[in-house]
Image 1 (tube, one colour):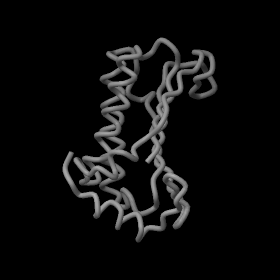
Image 2 (cartoon, one colour):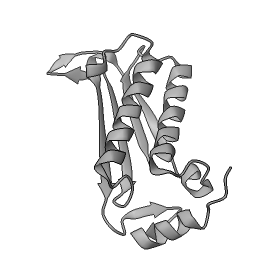
Image 3 (cartoon, helix red, strand yellow):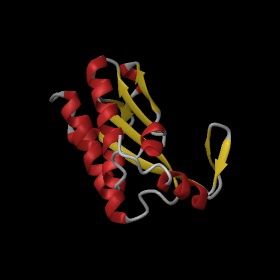
Image 4 (tube, helix red, strand yellow):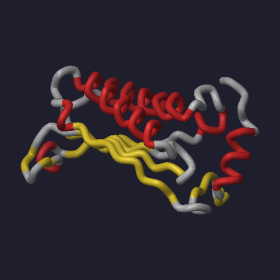
Length: 142
């Protein structure tokens, strides 16, 4: 379940970047009720994009901002409540990581869904049923 965190250079220290990413991963697991699920934990992946300050814009102007994008299979975080909970948690996590250097209104999040059967892990295509089966088969708590 890829997460992309995009921030301008200098906004988050390397340690704060790592802590924010870890917090975002934990938020996905918590909101989806899968904390401790080995399959899900291993498949929360992603990247942190640190861009030159002049490449991060809002309203057409350079601004200290952060963007969180979460890509999921269409069965994940399917309820409006789950989506809202993740977005609220993600905003809190990034705001805390920035330590007062970022206005809350300059944190944007979005959730993008892969269509049925278009989720791939280790060269295998998962449809919703096989993904649910893999998650359920790995219910061992870490």
